[in-house]
Image (tube, rainbow, N blue to C red; front, side, top):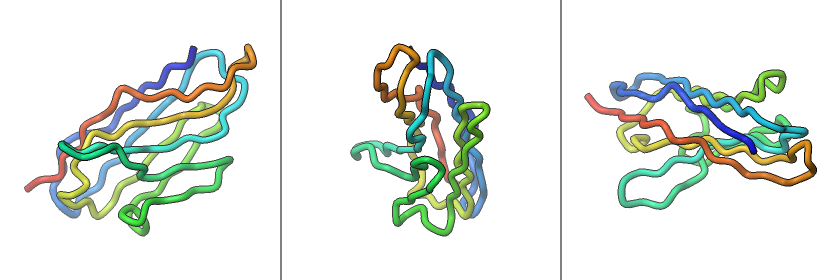
Length: 119
C-alpha cells in the first residue's frame, strides 16, 4: 500500500506564490510518474503538471507560471506556483504511479489541499 501526504495549500492574494509538497511512502519499488491535478467547484478534476521519469509536462494554464520538481531520494514531488490567479482556486491533488515491491502497479492519490486565490 502506498500513502501520499500533501501540504502547502492556503489562501494567497492574486499574483502571489505557493509551494505544494507531496511525499509518498510505503512499499515502493519504483515510481514512474508524479503529478498534480486540481478540481474546482462544479468542475472535473484536471491535470496541472506531471513529471514522467523527470521530464515535466504542463497544462496550458500552468505553463510559464508553475514548476513541478521531484526529489527521488525522498519520493517527493513539489509544485511551485507563481503569479497565481483567482481561476487557480481549487483543491489540488497529488498523484503517483509506480510499482510496489510486491510487483503490483499502483496509482495513488493524495488527500487534497485547498488553494484559494483571493484578495
